[in-house]
Image 1: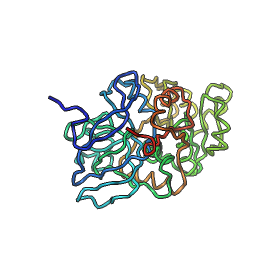
Image 2: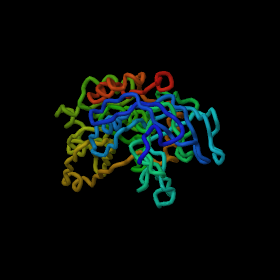
Image 3: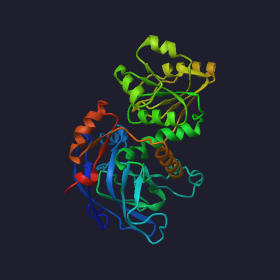
Length: 359
């Protein structure tokens, strides 16, 4: 007979979990494994609330295995290390992102692309090597293989820096891979939410001209004056879209809702690149003629490997890039999820786990 989550492992843990597709989260007692020779035990201090968390708790992608403890943007402090761990010590500030394991043997793992490993282990809603479930950062502690723990730079604030562990690498990795980093080139950022606002900051740090593409005219002032964008296009305004046609070298599409790709493709120059990182729950229509006639490329990208994620954190620390956040207590999470569904957040909720998770 299978053991309950509370009895699966020796270490008792407290968090918040969703138990069905209503998505409602409530207090949840479960357990984690003992710290093995290659493990790091971490006291969770802050955890970002990613749009993926909302999709998962409501089973919008049809793959949720309840009960689920979300959270893959964790910053905390090391409380214990295994005897074979030399990279970290007790008291170190560390981060844990979207993945906590892989096979470490396949071609993608050997290329430091663990995130594309066929046997990747996600931080939550996945299974460890011992077949037990993984639970995320809406909890007071976590035990992680040291190979998937990240050094969190001293000059990055742990609260506003936490979302970089998913949102940051999600936009940084494709910009690097697809060559979207040449100073002076023109980057369009579609969607100004948790991903988009960080893409603006990273794009500017690379020396790009950045235009925000949004359905919301109300975001223009903030995009330019607060986030540093050079210009703003309201995607529902035909005159503004027409004026911007064929002006962009690259577009990073962060929109998580179903939307038209044709207008975005039209904004690209010859040889332009459109890279999608948002995850709508239904397929998008892709017109082929404008791709062929403009030798344009449409690609995708999914976070990044551990080496590149560390590179991204160091880059953001160097350029003082953090997320714009609203810090919340754990018991506010259901209201936060309702607001997130309405895009009512500027631009990322972060849970103050260390000061608000009491049993």
